[in-house]
Image (cartoon, rainbow, N blue to C red; front, side, top):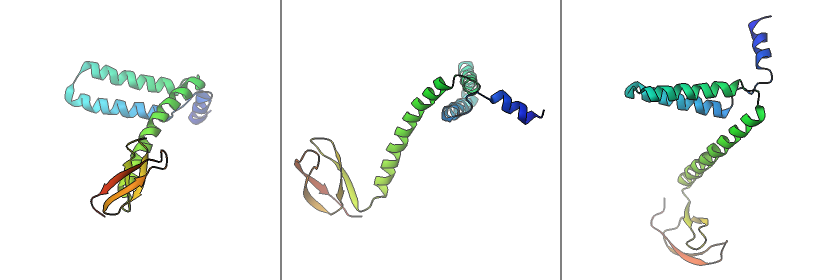
Length: 136
């Protein structure tokens, strides 16, 4: 038996690496880098514990629990990604502005035309004024 086959048999039924493993690994690398300058024993122990947790997760056979943990972390990561993506999309949009309705707080995408405009919110049907200072 070669090494690859033995490794495949050993990992059979185990959870393996997922997004949470990589997040934990990056956090431990960042803390280890900070510890180069701080030189704290507590921080070094924290790095070792995070790495140990990540490795134990990889070799775990409780797949259901590891999937739940990963889904919880991925929901937070996806929220951050969507917020960042919306902001990047808004910055790239030169023909429109984004304003919140003062009544229902809905975000409206309005054409970018210089001046003072009255607009009606499609959600609550209330009108309000919007000032656009410059066109791009």
